[in-house]
Each structure stands twice: as structure tokens, then as C-alpha cells.
Length: 198
Ligand code: HEC
Image 1 (cartoon, rainbow, N blue to C red):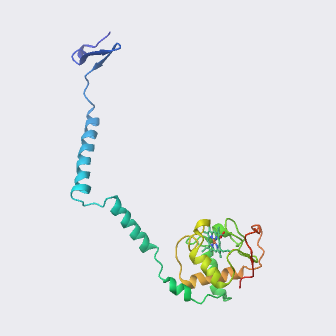
Image 2 (cartoon, helix red, strand yellow):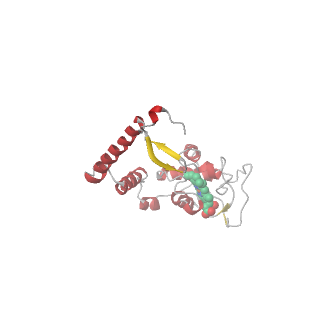
């Protein structure tokens, strides 16, 4: 075996299957990294476990849930939505407002119901076939409660709107009735309720 001069002193006296080891020092950068992880670990334990300055994972969860509840809290009480007078409006300004919401990134209606309401993942909103009814009240219920098990969460995307805004969207949908947009989603059996919105 060829051994360089300065390696003689470092050679450990054990040998396994003809393999011998040098007693080399760990690289300095590696050692510092190692010391750093130890110091970090000690700091971590004191910060989170001993002095409890930082929130643990349960507290962090509670904080995030509280923040989300605050962020998505509806200004309207559900009771107020129930007593709101839902109605199709043919006021052009209200219908425009509804279209803006339908096409907006906050509620994403168009992504599932198509740019012209022709239906995509969600049903066609322009024809006479409905799954959940076509009265203004029934549409309000469909929109404010959604169908989470079918992929539509409340308000389309979970971002609540005022009753006025919901009513504007309803009015916009009403204005789409009988527009026969291209590429309509096929009428499926389940859409049993035949009626005309507005
Ligand atoms: C992630 C996809 C998705 C988004 C976003 C979405 N919907 Fe829906 N929507 C659906 C699906 C799927 C259904 C069918 C539910 C069922 O099968 O019972 C539906 C049903 C409906 C219905 C009832 C239709 C009927 O035939 O009775 C209305 C009204 C409606 N959506 C309006 C809206 C409006 C308004 C928005 C935006 C605020 C919106 N949707 C956003 C997927 C979506």
C-alpha cells in the first residue's frame, strides 16, 4: 500500500477487508454548520417550548382559522339574506354590474358556467332546464349556498357578496335566458325543473 509521508500519523490501526482509514479532521465549514444546527436547536427549544414566545402548531392553526373567519366573514346575517327581496331586475346598470361580477376574478362564475353562461363544468344558465329551480329566491340560494359537493362553493369561490350584488348576478343570469350561446352544455337528465328565469 502506498502511503504518503504525512498520512502515516493519521492512519488508524484497524483494517477491514483491506480498507484502512485516515483520521482526517472534519472540514471547518462542515463543523460550523454542525455547531450552528446545535445552537439553532437549543434556541428553538427555548423559544417555542421553554419560554413559549412563539405559537406552537396548534396555536398557529387557531390563529389562521381566526384570520380566515375574519377574512371571509359575511357582513350580512343569514337571516338578512332570507328576508331580502330577491327579484330579477331589468335595469341595465344592475345587469351590467351582475355581468361584471359573473366575469370577475373574485367569484369566478364564468370559469365553470362559461363566458356566456352556456355551461362548462357547471350547468348551462341560459336555457329552460334547471337543477335547483329558476325563481329569484332559488337562484339566490344556489349562489349563496353553492353546491360544495359538486365543486361550486358558496358564492362561486367562497368570497361572499352583498345581497345587492347577488341580486345583480341573478338579474344578469335572468338577462341571459333564451340567448342560445354557442357550444351549450348538453341538457342532462338531472336538470328536471323546466322553467324560465326572469
Ligand atoms: C367551480 C365551478 C363553479 C363555479 C366557480 C360556480 N359554479 Fe355555479 N354551479 C357549478 C356546478 C357544478 C353546479 C351544479 C350543481 C349540481 O349539480 O347540483 C352549479 C350550479 C349553479 C346554479 C344552479 C343551476 C341550476 O340548474 O339550478 C346557479 C344558479 C349557479 N351555479 C350560479 C353560479 C354563479 C352566479 C357563480 C358565481 C358567483 C357560480 N355559479 C360559480 C359550478 C360552479
